[in-house]
Amino acid sequence: MTLRLSPDPAGLSQAAALLRAGDLVAFPTETVYGLGADARNDTAVAGIYAAKGRPSFNPLIAHVPDLQTARRYVTFNDAAERLAAAFWPGALSLVLPLRAEAGISKLVTAGLPTLAIRVPDHPVGQGLLATFDGPVAAPSANPSGRISPTTADHVFAGLDGRIGAVVDGGACGVGLESTILACDPPTLLRAGGIPAEALEACLGASLAHDLTPQNPQAPGQLASHYAPRGSVRLCVTDPTPEETLLGFGAVDAPLNLSPSGDLIEAAAHLFDMLHQLDAMGARHIAVSPIPDHGLGAAINDRLRRAAAPRAT
Image (cartoon, rainbow, N blue to C red):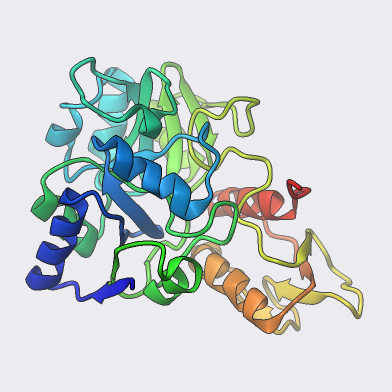
């Protein structure tokens, strides 16, 4: 049975004990709920792949409570230092060279010499990391390729009975996964909760882009990902009678990411509304056009992956 734990000291202590015992614990961050395991424990990390049905070549993100802790596991260059100072804690994961003495499971890095790492900006996530006192590998707490969870109930819908516990910290504020950036040279690997424009302003330079490589360097780089059960068609202004419209802006739709056209609101609602479409039994989903700048670029990235041909 998967436990539902309260986000109080007793619940966090129980969650940390489960992590130390090699179990899996889902917990909230400001982006989405993560499925946590001790990043140093091969068996525990393998449990993430088993619970999610995740391809073994797709790396995981390690979560730590602060920059000082991150330095134990990876090596920072000047660009990484500037980005961490500006955006941590927050929705930015940095892919950096792994220290030889880091002790991180190769299942976390998928055998690569780098590690994706971040400091989450959520009091419950921070509380768990401080109580556990170790790196926590945590992809989104959903079956692989499916919609990411932004509430504890979303986690239970996909993983109940497969994991040890869920720390129920309410709804996630950002609702979109972290931006992932390789730092040498600065290269955007996944659009996310920190817009690329903000990163470029911090660095004073344009980013390279490598969003769907043949061999993924970071989570979220598979072509088909974040998929609801129904087929998805994008940039639709005139849906067919068979399609359920996921709207944006001033359109008549059963579900609307943001009637006012606010990209922050749309990002926060995206995964929850995809879950709602699943619950409605929507077989064919049409999505209104969404501006492709700022957080809109991250939203469109998720939707393109949701609409991609599914693996068979």
